[in-house]
Image (cartoon, one colour):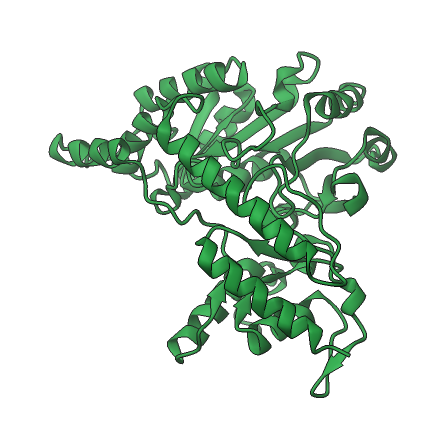
Length: 400
């Protein structure tokens, strides 16, 4: 008799975490590995946020918080949504969870029944499909193209909708491509959604503050779909707070209450100290905060440098990302080529070739639903990025 449930046996491991673990393993063996696999800012949490956490400890905020989060934090998040996004979410429409990943998982759990279809434009963040499958839903992938900046069109979305469609999930700015949707593009999607009254949207906006083209746009700004959009965000990326594990949603009240109900049975509230620190983060205006602006500008400089270096590598197709801290180059021109008897057939072969031959960790594009590409994170120093791209160029030149 099988010990483990079919649910866990059939669930895929997170490929991004697997490649990061592989890089750490090789480093422990003494290999000089440069990791471009992990999606984590290489900055420290802002000082005022850390001070708020220290004060929370001194003030004895060490007991169980309310399941959906402290009232002052939900009020601060409500104010943040209004200030930054023009969205009116009352505190009772907000649920604070242990990271954006839990927030996304819970939304899928409370909305999706077995057999429901969930539209996921590809490439997508690795965990979306597993969240859907765990809920018994059916992921419906809509392939986007590099030429269209990896963005789904209203026409593609309309063509994918069936009577079983319950949800569409996407991120903007995007992990893994770094692309983001403009207000006009989101309006086109909203107009399609508005025509289908049983269709909901999960908008993952965790990279909101790492945006190189102007004001961030949320699909919930359009009144015709506002009551069918769940806006997911958190502090991991924009505030360099990955380890604090704070994510949150702004949602129609019925969905927020359902997530609160589920969370009450699964984890209850998230860390009290991290919540108090996040209140301070929510007070930071991204248009004036030096920490946010400096981090964004550092990422912009790295993006520009990495773009030039990638464009200098023959055979790669590259688009300039508009946000986040990733490149998603098409490397399929190297498929079918070999080095030392090892043939590159797909993105998994490519990722393992680069980590073994170049000592550079990337992530295979198949993890994100596009086997033509690999993902590179530029959340590391300029010196390491230059060396990593030099190694990649050298390794790819060996393939014949």
